[in-house]
Length: 407
Length: 144
Image (tube, rainbow over all chains, first blue to last red; front, top):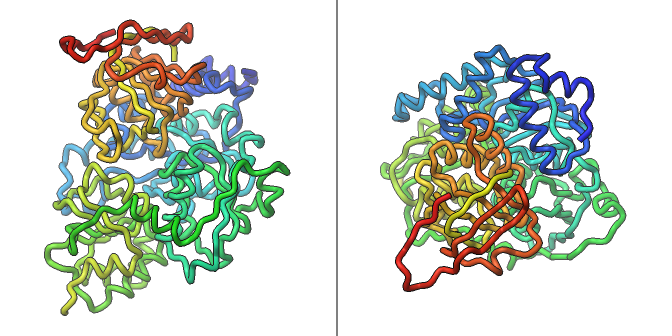
């Protein structure tokens, strides 16, 4: 790999001890994947911001960097933490976890990260643009940055993101390289089959595409023009867990793939697959195994709810009461919660018995029960170690499952 | 990742997301939807086609190595950089890591079965089947 004088200086310790560790990890990774150079990175999203995910080994690395005086060279945002910094005691999070999380927060923010604590940093906190080389962790955010914004990021692993923020570099391989962004497969959405698509449908479509595309780049034709940012969020999250999709070209949405020719770089698709009602139904059946009429937990906000989603939820819950034996959890960012509180949405949700939780992920919220209803295809797929039965439905169906039928 | 390791093979043809499937503190596969559900990867030569899903898998493999619950080696058709990062960091932080072989000439899942005693030499890019598992032989756990 060709290293510039600046790269060499980082490796040799001219920018501190932390830079040596970070740079040597990234150079070794680059060698494994035949990178030719180290790229300059302009923005980082750190996935490894939760103690519960990066564990003691990750905390040790981050503290080692911080205490040796390391500071981030580029703007960095943070993924959810292990705790809601305001509500953790009320939510019965063990103080042992909270203490470790606060140490981690102290080190990450101390090195210069913005404490966004959200898995949807593209909605609140991160400023990125078309064509920029960025280094993002968190699979849904990676998908969104590449697919919707047209920035360029490889799928970063936890702590590689921290290393990248320290040196502002990442090896040039994978999705940074133009030739690897060429579309491979064509999916055609049969619009006549769908009256209207909601966020959960977009998640189902994403999951179906991800499971076929695996690590290849899907091109999708027929995405309706009225698709919302929240629906694209749901699509990207599900495509990433259905396969390893870090980039989709959604014709009409993805800014650097406006036409099919542009998406395929002038070449032909390896395969053409149409998506209609049957494909969606089969995917739903693969994801759901709920047999009962009632569930223990209803969860929204995977990825984190936007202000618009919180507002809609408040409208649906207004004047209703969540059943006594059901836990309604709503996950969001501190920024969205603060804005939604300004317009009264948080009070409405909580008055009905729902729980609006910020800064963290459902993974870390203690709850009782083994059955789940969610609007998130991603959550339905990745939560099987916590739930024995999982059902998927849009926000209206989730509210229906949460509230008592007779008021 | 370079190095030599030996152990019983644990083979799947299903892609694996370590983040939601592996409990790094015990080495157990906890994803009910995976065909390795309930198995323990610790000390094994873990063979799966490729990693999928979450970027947290890097921290998962790092923690498994720290807790001595990682497989002795990993063989993939294509190793996700996310998994490679975990192994590189383990070497930097703890001076220990696990060999990873990727892009082998033949698909190891066609040649090696679960519980076959297998040796991996990632430095030379060699995978060797030392001994086929016989159903009636007493259970032995391989170690590197």
